[in-house]
Length: 315
Image (tube, rainbow, N blue to C red):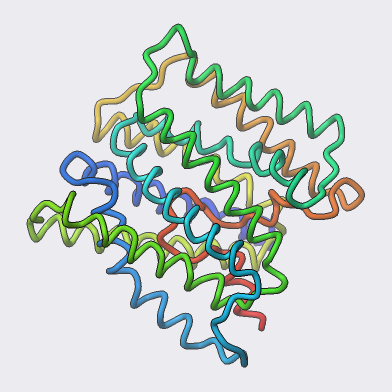
């Protein structure tokens, strides 16, 4: 088996596990607030991340060299996680993924003012086509838009902003700083909401919170293995396989169906996203490759970013 095929299969397995992780979030979302799910899932996953951080032997301290960008990124991580969890709990899985698939488009747009990235006519047209795909999925004025759609778009935007900030300051900050600040912010900010949103949990629901943390950890490890095995242009498009899982899980567990316009819009978004990824893979096109550098599934924010874990492993 060649490295490209092996990397693609590892990525497909990772995103299949992520999709299962999202089903657990959706099940719990019918009973608990997004803040409570994020708080306990992050708390139960913290020991797994701590083990990885303890292996970092790089000299240095935990003082951020870019404190304001670091704080902004920590806040965007909390926003992305809470918004994504809420969107999963109230929207059909396929629609939620379609909205999140817009992240590469938003990363491309944000990289222009924040990274000085030059986006040519081809990538610019791909972004425009992808945004049209989002409009096809949402169909404003023709379909009933819910608060969840707005929150899903918020998750996509804050996740994209998070990715661009990492690209902007990542070379100057230690991996441990970039990992710990968002985790600490998630713990304290979601913890601060507990007096207002907490509902007593049954033991099986608490166990399901642990399952979310465990699945996220396993999927992250498989994603790391995929990126170490195959180029990003091979691995990155595999995330779109989640729409297939959404169709299966949505039908089996939630009696959801994908309407024609959601399928059409999702196909348009995926096509534009894949084009941007392939286009950035051409060395003469992008000096920053902001989308290809975004190796994480940032919309849930429980685990440190894959790119940071990869970098820590090579320190």
